[in-house]
Length: 482
Image (cartoon, rainbow, N blue to C red; front, side):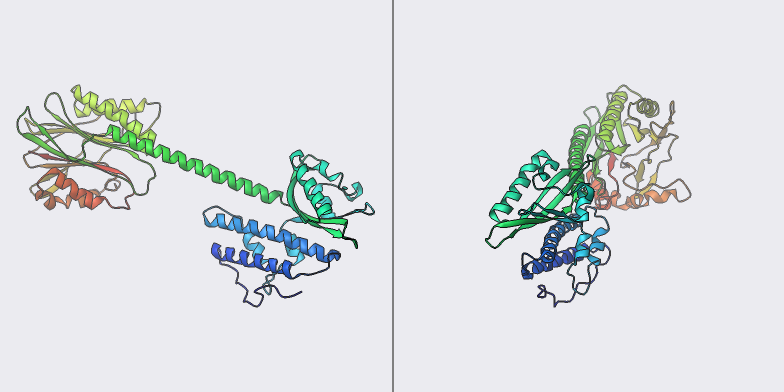
């Protein structure tokens, strides 16, 4: 037999683990060589050994096509079991042309021949095993064979056999058989007619391969891909809903907000910003808010509810709505935090939250504030900054009946307050180096001193901390006292 195409080329070396491109290249190279064997193998049709080899090569072509498809899917991110490497490495390195034993391992294969002149039928031992029959049961005739197939596959077999015996066409197709024990197998049949001296078919031979496991794997792969696509669509929908809910709940202002006192001069200049996460696929439960209260005081608040997605943003909306209502009703920050804790503790969807609530009286310039497991406000004055000493307060929802202390701070004109959620600066366990957590923010004090507005300060913070590789989303609120 002539040498296959490219047989003079150096054989590809076995691929390193994970080198999918190398595997794909070898699989396609091998398929080309099997095609060459089929083209160059001009053996007489009546030679059973050559017919068997040719049929095995046909089956190998189908199997290599399947392998190429699987490797392509692996390259796109789907898993393939380790047999792909073994399949290629088992082929002799000298030629990379499969022999009958190697092709036989590509799938269980058996052979059959039906003699039309003598009605004699010959089956190989492997074909009996594929059909779940014993040699004592005898082989199936062409008339009996369709009764073993699914009803919807019987027409396909009939057409293949008719085309082979009447028109001299080759057989190449798949169908499902139901064995005596009720199990179902999918088989792939290839074959040809054997022609007599007058040109008519005198017998039909075929090679049958059991491809049940392969088709089952392909079906599982399709189902997995469909499931992943559904999950991706669900995640996209959830993210869109979370974004829409967040935008509906958070204050509509993104730039400067100024609060005048009783129609008089502006008492506070405000700016806020939301910094999204680069790694999280979903929106978190961070919030910021500022509003002027009926008694002329100003409410400032930031917080963060655990989790991501619609559940977190809906929980955030509930807390922020309750916080606004209780602040309008006149509750001070400490008692207000206690009621927020009860609300979250009794919620049907348990969660934890951190929060910071400040109430500023422009007449006395006193800031009353309380916190629930949240970073303290930062106060900048005269080119330096410091973190306010926090009053006692546990995370919201952590324990029933928790009480929250309240602290006060005397402010002055020109003071700058920075409130932020803990996603802005990674927090560390309390300790001697605790102040290092906000070092970068406090180091910006000279820049803040030269800023003309809260919005300028907010822009500086966003430039410093709004990096693409942010690990978590965060909110920042800047308030400048007039």
